Length: 67
Image (tube, rainbow, N blue to C red; front, side, top):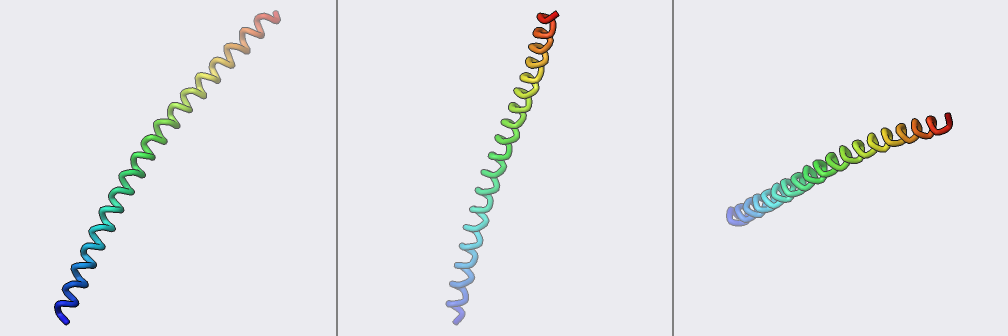
């Protein structure tokens, strides 16, 4: 019976180590995706700000033309 219990403990330890390695991999991938997402969101916000500025300039020029 002791041999059976030892095998079960070893199997549980292997399973635990596999689950920890899987968790670590997933967490690293999630962190990479988050960093990429954050970078893209920053670029989108910068682009939106530039568009807003250009629209304001265009509106100013169109207003001056009408005068």
